[in-house]
Length: 429
Image (cartoon, rainbow, N blue to C red; front, side, top):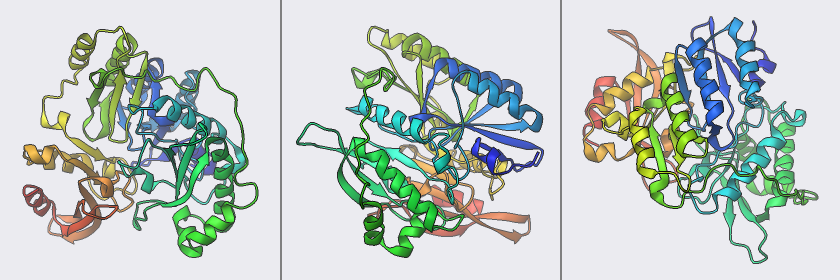
């Protein structure tokens, strides 16, 4: 089977091991129902060596799929409402939201679902030069608004209508570029028309495989703003309320938030099935995959909070070991990814083994290549496998160590480290 553009649009990429493939499962705001999670776990057990990978954009990936399994896996995912159109390729990717425990979360979730519905499978926006990433966040504290092609942040409104600040043209990779403030106080009903304007401008004036940030760098922020904020950009596309805009239970107290840490994003199928059972019993049947590769659930009103925590621990997520407590975002690296230069999970485990308590409290990330899918520039301590070199052991990776500072992104503080040098360096963190 040739993985052409159309299969990429279905969320399918070839794996590093040429006879295997990856299927990405697209989740709006990282939300998946308990029934859907059970189906994913079942498919992982049959076709994906019993493993599920949680991504840093709140999606799920199934690796190690054979060519013959692809149609069956896609059909079974669709049977439970998991359609993965646009999960890969030049399309609008899954819309993220890391703020579903914040005040006002139902409105944010409803906006995510509206955007997800509008652009998933929309043929007008499936011929983009490269991926297009959209986020909705409660505020700018996480700095995730700086790495999206478009991100919407709610702001106070004098007329009781929902309004958002719009950030544009952010991205990481080899050329990290923080998004800029494109527009302030845009009505929610105008966000989809504005997004369409941005996408049309992007498609018409950007050569593949460039991201939106490259177009803005070429023409400048003011010229980009003039082009996309012109006539019709702020058309109001009013939608009527829906009963399914928000499905995530609103936690009454912070103690109602359960979080299962999944080291390096690598989750056993049995673990996902166990979490689905906890969600079904105590959390309204809803799970959330976060950008930190954890699984969050909210205990519903009337459910026994302590029994829910006990069930989470019994499912294998007691949070006792260092690997179960640390936030350590991790891409698949050379384990499965064609682009990977280093075995990220092995390196992450070696790093965690050397961390003291203060360092374990930091937010970590490791990316297996300079594309930086694990978002190391948003971590308090980040690692990038930057290149391969020839040494006595053959071709071996070299690592750059990043630390957060005063700028929008973490910066490299040591570069070109061997694995031994990296381990020595993290001992000092």
